[in-house]
Image (tube, rainbow, N blue to C red):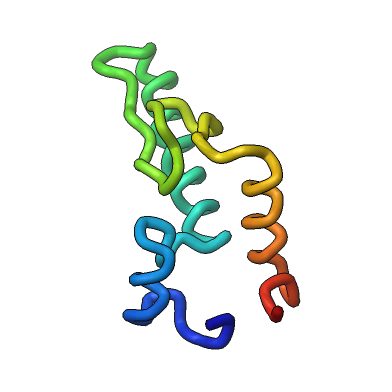
Length: 87
């Protein structure tokens, strides 16, 4: 499984919502959210506060809140590191 593309049918079947969400995707989503917030702040906070891009496993509107426990998140992030998912 570690050699299949993240968007392969098997990866999507096994990972569900997590398929395609790798480190780069998470960083891009975070970058988008921060830029949207910064632009909103520079506009004196007029209009509705920008909503973050939904991420797999996040249960509220605030990024960083998850149903997953710390050990599961640590294992997930470790698998994203180079050489971390070779088992």
